[in-house]
Image (tube, rainbow, N blue to C red):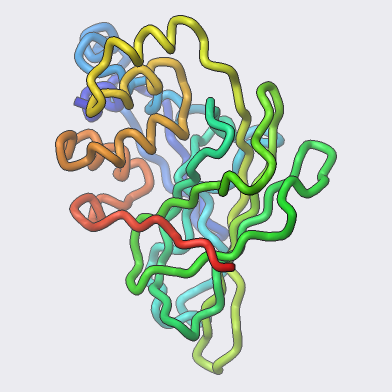
Length: 254
């Protein structure tokens, strides 16, 4: 279902790395009306169109490490699952953030670190949040803990996510991505749509209302039911090999 809407866009989705730019082309807009009737996730596809402008999330960019630095990393580096042309919207006080982590960790691995700043570049968190990595590479989520200050409606925040690997010489190498997130209030129409939608379908009203973070979170929760939609979403990041893999929620360290 998601594939039909993504293919309706002639726009170009840009996937950036430090060294390479990939272009993923979508089909003619003549299919738009039909595709929209079939799949409300077209709005998610549209988020990946257009050129990058100042202040946009850079999370789709891979992190800064290379294969020579961290032997476990293959052609895919650290990736944030965020839109191309904005930082993404949320309605939640404590939303989930989504990433691809290119290597696994163990009890001796340095923790992943998340920082969150407001538009005045002041820290929103009491201190940077530390998370344990899963034992294998894959798609992960981070939930902002309710012990911290909630995101405020109408405010934009910038997050910074960093992981650390050990290179061939035994030296730690940092890899990081960053992006924007903005909280908005739930409109009457969105609340109505959610109430009228079955739980496994609730990614649809969020996608229709351009609310990126909840759309991804809801789709991830129902990915075993909506396998094709989940696969199509991951294809935007060239991560379809993980479509049938577990999704890990990173555990917060004390």
